[in-house]
Amino acid sequence: MEERESLEKRTGFAGSITEYVDVMVEQVRQQVGDKRVLCALSGGVDSSVCAAIVHKAVGDQLVCVFVDHGLMRAGEPEMVDQLFGDHFGMNLISVDAVDRFLGKLDGVDDPERKRKIIGEEFIRVFEEEARSLGQIDYLVQGTIYPDIIESDSDKGVVKSHHNVGGLPEDFDFELVEPVKYLFKDEVRAVGEALGLPHELVWRQPFPGPGLAVRVVGALTPDKVRMVRESDAIFRAEVAAAGLEGEVWQYFTVLPGTRSVGVTDGYRTYGQAIVLRAVLSSDAMSAGVAELPWSLLNKVTLRICAEVEGVNRVMYDTTPKPPGTIEWE
Image (cartoon, rainbow, N blue to C red; front, side, top):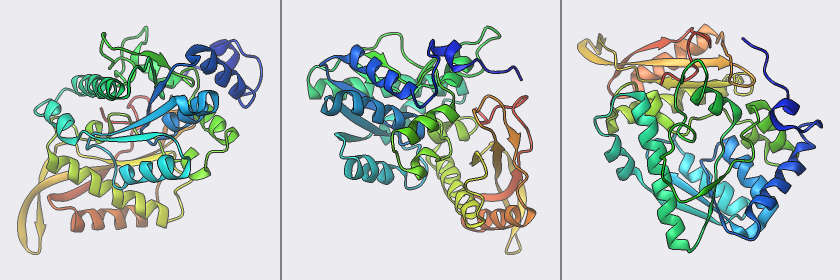
């Protein structure tokens, strides 16, 4: 893997990453002036750090919008409301767009099309919210440097991130992207410098398109349910084993593979679930986490017993490269 560019080469700033926080705050202040700003808030570390930077720069000129597209992990919509609305006291609007997104994605099996549909629909929701709030010219996004690299490489697009290559050509905002030249580990350092809660800063990454890119092929509500329920089991057992802070990212995928099984003496023909756990620092490359067999066995038995429609569990041992961290 090529050595990554220095912070100075990416930004022109020669100081430390924590010193760069003041630079980002001032850049936002200069860009936005006295205008109002929408922040596309997902609850992940990237958008959360961006919200904190912009809030520090322009205060109540910022309105955060959380769009529930029906593709979040279990409990996440409630977490976003509690943390950003109640704890941080930011202006927060939550939009229930589950039917809207799933309708647009119905029957779509190409991963690039899924990402582009989600990217465009996010923008349309934000435009509608902006119109209801009056004139808003700026949209904050949690774009980071690996998103740009994978969406616009001289070796070809790896995958269009919903907030880069997935954006529509026509939209009504000027983008504010405070961390777009930072890698994930640097974003976390900024979050800590801003005083964000440790558990938020060190949450495992979650893609903007959500569970849509963890269901291979076309989505159905039932497939999304299988991924959401199996993911909750996997995350709970990793945490119970005391490995939550040691694994960069861990999640489940529904690859669309069905197989014959036996449950209570009866033949089944169910879906398979793939467990994915990787080690990384910046998401540009990743190794496979060697989880204990006892943990994998427990997760497998729970998923097969508790997630209706699943009768087989597999473990993905592919590093990045040649694979990507996500399956789509």
